[in-house]
Length: 118
Image 1 (tube, rainbow, N blue to C red):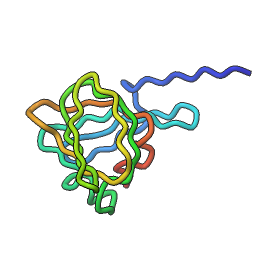
Image 2 (image 1 turned 60 degrees about the horizontal axis):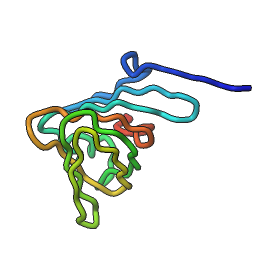
Image 3 (image 1 turned 30 degrees about the vertical axis):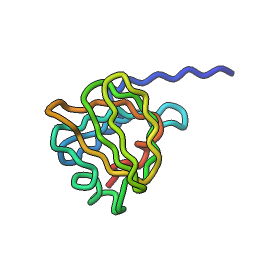
């Protein structure tokens, strides 16, 4: 039997709010897909760390940046920026923050199942 499941991120099943941002979530099959919006001033270690309770983000992110820019620093010190049109893979063990005055909007296919979950 073939299965086709489609859900709209414009009508999320769940919204998780945190300072300077939110994630809109849908689950298709076994995958939680989310559209995240991070406002200028957002920084993981300030805005999500208190929710996660870990020293750095332990989510594995695979996504696509729609708009804005994000700077990511891995626990080992390596770092990079991601911006509009970039496909990204970010392994666990990182901090991140928004660069500039534009919100960063990205779709994440792997890292939001438990992200900022209270």
